[in-house]
Image 1 (cartoon, rainbow, N blue to C red):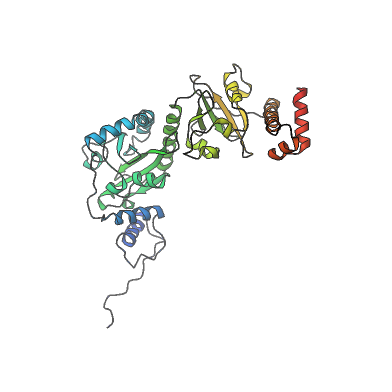
Image 2: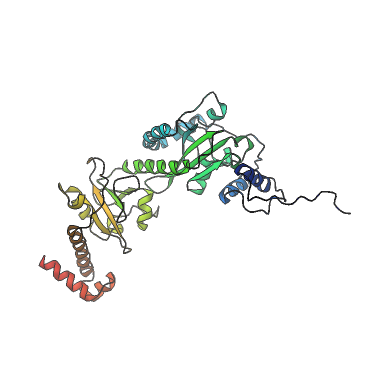
Length: 386
């Protein structure tokens, strides 16, 4: 018997506005509507993954989300465990509150489990939708609050932006939010930073703002680690002294006590989060004492910046500083004869070390360094003359 259900073609999506596309995506993924299920992707794939996880947990979009508080005992433990994060983030949250004051967005800081540990910005406590998600101790993790910037950033470990119906629950479709994960000095996720608005205009540029603010918090956490020397890193041609620097903190013996994400991305040996603290000599192809010497100079050449070789063959600019010396200047290494001499000195030290490790076997040392024997002899000869 022929079906009496009228045929409806799948909707065209190219000219649809954003909220309509989101609505079609919800019909396809959350309700399995076959008329839109085979259309082109209408939301980011990570949003679909989050929706599917929420469905697997037994949630339905029409249900009310759970904005439950953790227990009093758990809240006390959370406060104690995240005190350093809150203190490092507070100045950043205050600046954020000023930056977003006229946008109807506010800032939320959570721990690595999605529990609120601090807030800032224009929060209207008379609005239950704002009050419920900004209470210290509220669990806004994905299993509790569904798809949102908080759970997404903690799961995807990258900055995200969600607008209205991209949230899982129907009740949370009033929110728009940007989020970025926060990584501690040990390289592990320590929490996340969120910017949320209620029935506010879409502001995808907030994804950039929240990512930059997260970087500032990470840097404050790194510099808060006990250290005898801090080393700012960046690629040649880039300035040194801002939040884009790689930061490495080391103790008096040259062992790393902490590093930010930028440094971990520049120096591959810092990428591992296990196996114990690496040593400066494992990171940089020069004796770590040279970094301390550069930091101690009263009138350092080139502002104290060293052109520093890595064991990978790449080179970074490094600005070593002793604690208490004040903020780093925004500066870059100028091309000069002095910079060249410093690099030659570093290379000479490396060659001498390689020859020493090879017990005087120049052929073996040259092979280990990837240079010719003539280069080794020439550099050793120039080192003796100097």
